[in-house]
Image (cartoon, rainbow over all chains, first blue to last red; front, side, top):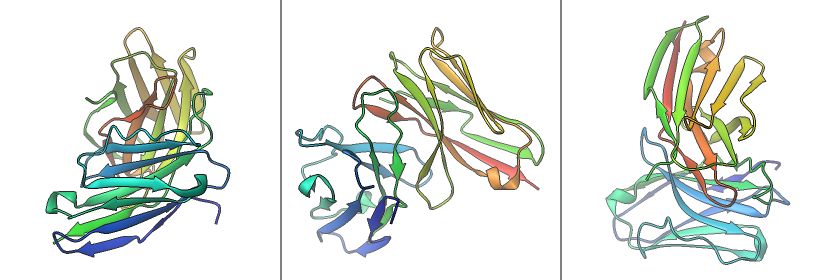
Length: 116
Length: 110
């Protein structure tokens, strides 16, 4: 498809389980972002990938959160030992190379994570 | 800390009226963008205004930027029920940092 694809669209898990969320960015986009959005709230930055550079992990809330981007394309966000406060919508966005004055982000529909 | 802060947090208007949302930010920026989010969906880019621009139009949207006051406004004219959504401003500080505000929830009543 032409847009950013995220899977699954919904995930229900039990407290303590690990989950993996997937993001397929737009082909040719070198930058990839993960955000978390709690109900009725704004976006919380989690992690940013740009090309082959080391990712900016400054937004990850704890060491239970990790992400990787294989081959400069697909990205996986992993949450280990999930807690109820991890329940949120996880949004992925991609863009062309930033820093060129036109860093428009294209978002996926998100993964709604519910931790019971 | 939040770079962009929108106000009001929520706005309810009648169809046909104009809606104005404001965004304030704290540091120097390269550009400022506005996004819309319909319930349960991802964000969609609406308009980008560069730091050396003061006003920009796109259809029924008008964005202003005042870098001396570190603020921007988004005006939606002749609103429609389909404009009901949350609106976010996002600032880009010349690099990778891209910070979204908490958003304004707009309800347009038929």
